[in-house]
Length: 256
Image 1 (cartoon, rainbow, N blue to C red):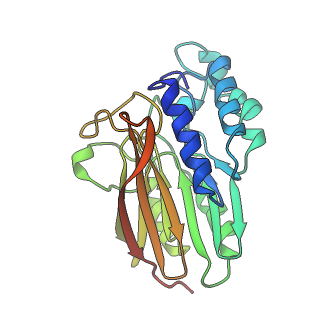
Image 2 (image 1 turned 60 degrees about the vertical axis):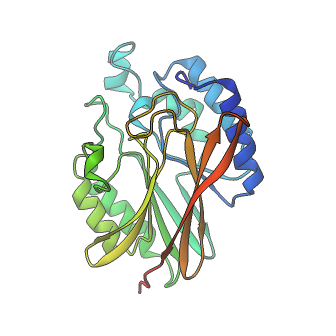
């Protein structure tokens, strides 16, 4: 909210998500542009109309802005996010076959780049350490932890390598990222383990990035005992609707 590509796209996104009848909707940050109160009101209202359970992690734009609230950014950087969104959504989710953990990589000390710490590793180990063999492990973080395409030319979060390696050792199957405004699904190999990466695109904003100028997209993901299927849905302006654009299937690697 604050850099929307238009009201039609927000309505179409909500309609598409609710039509999917998902078990869980994961939002990997940057709900708002400048953390203004009226932006958060709109974000809260939009999230309230999502039918599925929500798991949300904050992005760098969700913290108070250096431009408008420098003192608040230093003292209570997530204050408005926590009051208006964070207290109403989960950062963990479980069902018999899937366990999801969201980590907060946003930091007030940089403009864009995120930060990962040993505390993130400890929390991940506690969370996934209790999972049974066969349970799909999913980690959601705003800032990407691994390089997925050198052509994107983007920095990883500080400390990303340590958290990514710990994720592999914890048996994580699926990594959900945001931040780069680019839509991509791929498999990576790290620490002797294959993990699937779902990099969320720009769902409803006009903040596009090359080579995906003008592309608004999100991912629908199905996790089974043997596979992870990532389907990209893109906004079609001619029809004012999101439509399935591509589909990739990745084999899950057994853990435990």
